[in-house]
Image (cartoon, rainbow, N blue to C red; front, side, top):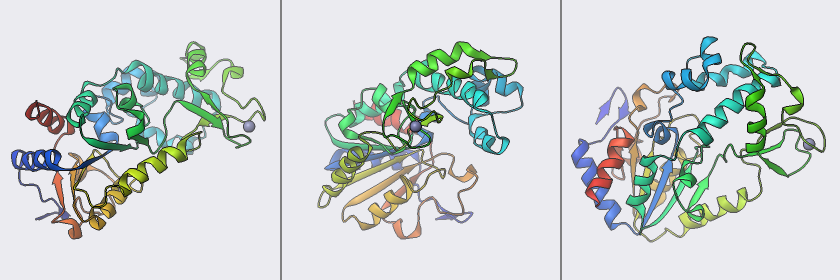
Length: 300
Ligand SMILES: [Zn+2]
């Protein structure tokens, strides 16, 4: 079935859920891929204007409406004192104020007892904070937790939390700047600014290799692949590899849960389900919360 050029092959919520339940119960292995849509379903949405007003009031007063707009800030040439006023607020809220999510805990309950693995592009650490075992998790985009030298003079990284604690009381809310520039994170060796250690931190390659090893070991097994809320900000991280894996794997089924696909700007005309995968993938254009809660209820 094609709708406005996007292939949506869902058969309705109940039928799709039954099919997913059957695959979950009968598969040897379950691979989860989670993007921003999962945290949005858990209440932490980077498109939520009300949430933004609450945790970034100075930015809201300047006409910004939600965090994703802040990707524009590179064009505005923010001084470091503002960059870190924003970062301190953002990281503090996402990482330390927002509580471990009940929705993530339900997802974990659904997976317990199964041979599962999670790959995520989310930096908010919700998987670890809700009890997912680190050895079954690959944070492909790292997290907010570590900082590294922007000049790359060392491979060493630093915990972000002490910096955040120091910066928060130093925010001048009028100018929205850090008042004491000496508090802005800088490299103790070369003095360059510190930035998020997205993929460059100790252990990243080993985590990535563990994920690849788990996927390679799924050859010959029945593999249930569940993609949750993955859009087109970084499709090369989860979305496209999952499509290739589904196509190449002898016994895999991809369930793509994404409510906002059709509204998402910048999908570049890619189908929700590529034509080649029609017999091996199911589109589930539903709220991830509804799907996870229904699976949780039917699995008890
Ligand atoms: Zn340095």
